[in-house]
Length: 189
Image (cartoon, rainbow, N blue to C red; front, side, top):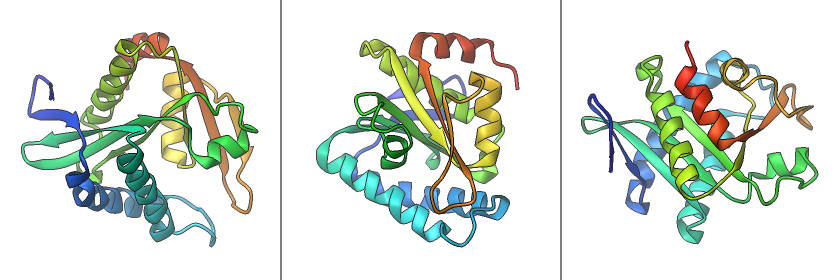
């Protein structure tokens, strides 16, 4: 278990955590959809179902590491990494990133945002990847709020393409792990 200086405890997820993850993601996705315009093709229910299929597959294949952040006994955030990247990334990049580890599912409870929890989860995942010898990762966003944060932290995306059948752009970053850790250490909100 990873411990932080305050009440935030970070640990790896296990299959028994599935329902906790689902409930947190439901709140986060519903909140995001209130502030985003995805058109009629993407709904919070579809997004949650898609994300939970990823979780189920990750647990079944042991292909993804998911970290959970707890404030006391309450799950307040998640982040994950694994390979191959999601189908959206692969489609938008013509499978160029098929062997690249994807960093994703950075979700913070809407009532707990802007406390640095996302930054701590991101740093935990990147440091774990560095220990494993991973040099490069990719991550994406369809959420406008997240895109603004990622641009401030990591610059312009490596790929920026209109999502097929949707009214939004799919941004994908490919970043160096060590450089990203250094950027996070220097990052000011």
